[in-house]
Amino acid sequence: MPGPLLEQALRRYGVSPGAVLHLAEVSRTSLPVAMRRLVYGRLEPDAHRAAFLTQRSYVRDVASANISLDFGVGARVPEIALRQPDARLRRVPREYGAGLVLGTVAW
Image (cartoon, rainbow, N blue to C red; front, side, top):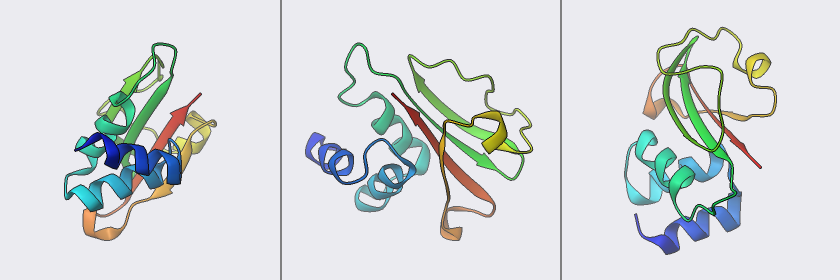
């Protein structure tokens, strides 16, 4: 995924689920690949970013840089908004899979 594509997504959406979906769509990659590009790409030493993907009540994937989340892949998290209240959450279009929610945390 080229750097200008990442820069465009960050300018338009910031560190958000929308940026991950945009990267996945325009580069035709999977959500986990787009999550990692957003979290680790152009990362300043003091940046804190994380992205995660849940399916129904289970965490399917996590990418984190300088943030310690209290859950990992495979964890059961019935209500992600209560567990990670500072996360920006978005339902993922059904074409990526059923019951998926994408979340990002950044500061």
